[in-house]
Image: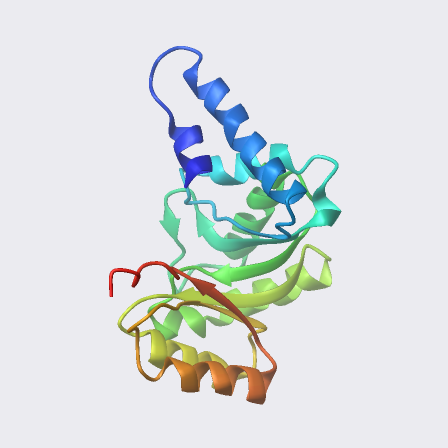
Length: 200
């Protein structure tokens, strides 16, 4: 969030540059203190997050597991997006991130099984993986359809990781989803929104 705020900044002359530098400093400091997983997306701060991380990772790319999303600065790709559209979104992310590959790419904020099963998305991922531009495929979800979408992803056998909203009081069936993901498909689990339920 600090990096996002730093990139958005105020409209005063010079503020944007200084705040962008502050975002880079925060990312570098995190890596120095042992953070080795970075997650971003083209639509975080209209690509500002990717740009900050890209500048911050100069000389440090091998220090982190880098994740982004199949997405544009203006939002998610629809289920019927073309193979080339999916490929282009990652290639544009790689340019902003100043790297030749990411470790993981997610179908972003996925609340529709159609987006999860998109044949074009899967074909694009396979091509990008073959070209060495991405290693693993995942999806993120934090919607009322999370359990349904997650179970469909597990059943497909196509996904390497799940990023799930996970906090106190959320979805009683989530424990079973996580168990299935790990035991049946050896999927990685990334928890997000972990403090959202703190008030409970």
